[in-house]
Image 1 (tube, rainbow, N blue to C red):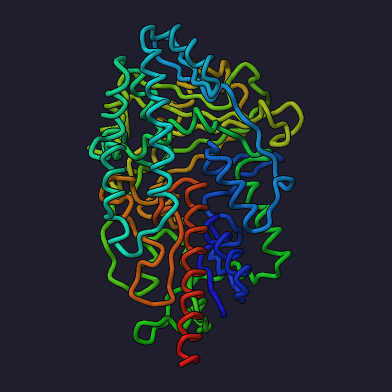
Image 2: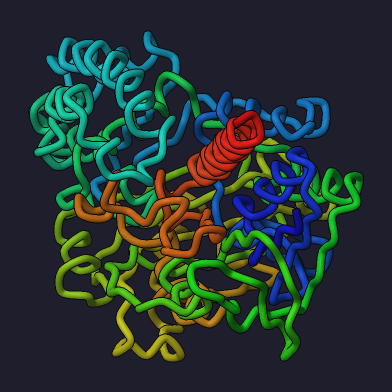
Length: 489
């Protein structure tokens, strides 16, 4: 069988490897010169830093799926980070998150005495919820909608309190507002607001504590190198700078693709571009989706390494809810934003020339076409000043180069409306309501990526590729069984 994979994000690349394992003749089409999608680097003058994702979660899921396609753990290196990160507040106080339970209890006692038992109850409840939630919603697809609305799933949804938001669920455990925020802001990892994302996503902050936060030596995007090496080893055809313009259909079957103005025939198509934009390519009615939040990203090359800093740090605002409403409701640049910083040079000297370092700063911002992203230099200066004053002394004097990326840049690169994480993880865009792996009427067209079920985030997209492989394998077995039954008659 000839299979075309449109797009080379992590979901598309893994889908190609899975397809090759099934014995298919695979061709990957990538509109750009480089592979990897969101997993790529900013590189300049001997420096490199992850362009997109930086926080590595669910390491066992990542390792298991890579092993599925023949990529062993000796081909990449995962480093656990503990403490997980530091939350710094404008009044000078800090709160450190730990994977180590005892250290976390000690930190809660230091900052929020009386909340220790609440944390232990949180861990106990979430342990059970995580296993049930993963089994019910991450390990299965919902191509048939009835597969979602089972008695067991409804009971699980009720047990997970999916009728609540992540913010409401944190409030049910912790009394201090800052502690509530510390266990709910993680919806921003997948582009959602704590007050809008269903409580199912509370499993993200829980996972940080139990499964840890990790770092891929060489940067998260270096995982793509391991995958590409396997792609080359398997002699999978990769066509860079080949933009698929549309699919060619005959009734309910796709016959091939039009790429760079020419028709190429295929028996199976897997689309890996951002799903809302792929609807036009597939040739179906384009639906309206709510995009995830955008990111204002500032990348810096430094003449030093801040060894006293944390790899991950969050410079919190006193009013996180206002920041969230600016991003998700009023769609304006937040006046007093929370800022995330990533300084991997502390543990990885390979990212910069000797003695030098890299720094990545991120501000969650709205996707709003009315914002003039070309005129935000003063806003970027404000972000740099804030990070300098609160965690990186004399930062400006240490800057060797700077690059800035806005939601407009993300949109130009193919992300829906400039959202950085696929469509938003709202209630009506999660689970059965999210585009599924077989979302079209065409019998041989599939989808994988951050905007499809099970959702955004690198390990979850990888899980989506695995679910697609399992689905296609089951169809092949069913088809072979049907043919055997017919021939025996």
